[in-house]
Image (tube, rainbow, N blue to C red; front, side, top):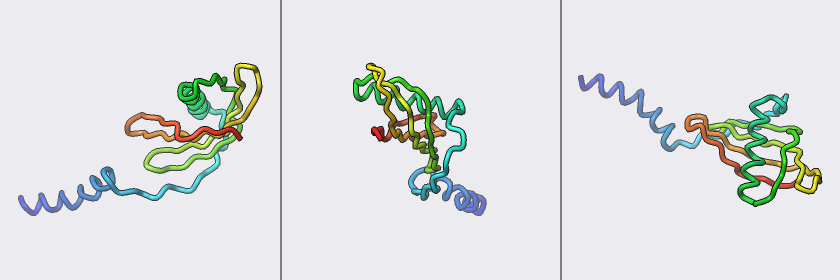
Length: 114
């Protein structure tokens, strides 16, 4: 019985430690081949919506121009997004969005004009 418990502990301990505290190195950034796919458009729209709430600015999503992604205990997306403001002026922004799959949670990490 004790032997089984020790074996089980040795198997589960690294898994629990990974989830709870081990910082795994992020993967290298990889270009996104088609930023117009639905899931990437959804992330781009999320970034614009989150920015509008934070800044009280009104930007409209036009399209994703290009992007890259990275795995880092979830997925991080860096998207160049074409927008229009309330006066119709077009500008591009770089938005970085982190998505934690386990929690189904998205966070806008940065948003800047380029």
